[in-house]
Length: 214
Image: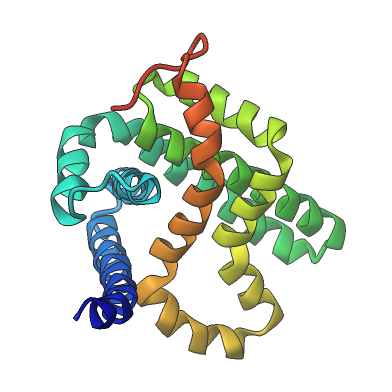
C-alpha cells in the first residue's frame, strides 16, 4: 500500500497545483473586470502565489478574497496610476502611429518596457509589504535596477503575449485561449519563484522604508 501511495501522491500534487492555478487565474480575471480593482486583483494573486512558493498557503480562495477585501482602498492609487499611464501610452501610440516614425515608436516601446519592469516589482511589493504608495513606487524602481536578472524574467513573463502579438497575430489568437485560463497565474508563479529569496532578505531585518508583510 505504501508503494502505491508514493506513486499516486506526485500525481495528486500535480493536479492540486494545476487546480490552484486555474482557480487563481479565474478569480484574478473575474475580479479585474470592474477595472478599478485591477491592482487589487493582481496583488491578491501574488499574495497567494508568494504563500504557495513558500509552502505556507492555507488554500487559495479564502486568502485571495481576504487580501482583496482588506486592501481594496489601498490599491486604488495603483489602479488609477496604471490607468493614467495606459491612457498616456495609447495616446502617444496613436499620435506617433499617424506620423509613421520608427524612432518615435521605438522610444515609446522603450518606455513601455520600463513601465512593465517597474510595475512588475511594484505589484508583488504591494502584495508582500505594508508601506506607503510613494515608498512602494520608489522601492519597485530600486529593485528593478538592482536585480537585472529577475527584472528580465519579470519582463519576459509579463510581456510575452505582447511580443507574440507583434510577431505573429495569428499564433497569438490561438495562444490567447490558453492564456485566458492559466496565463496570469503561471506568470505570477514563475515571477514569485524568482523574487521570494529577494523578499525574504528584505523582511529580516527590514531595511528602512520597507515594513513587514501585510
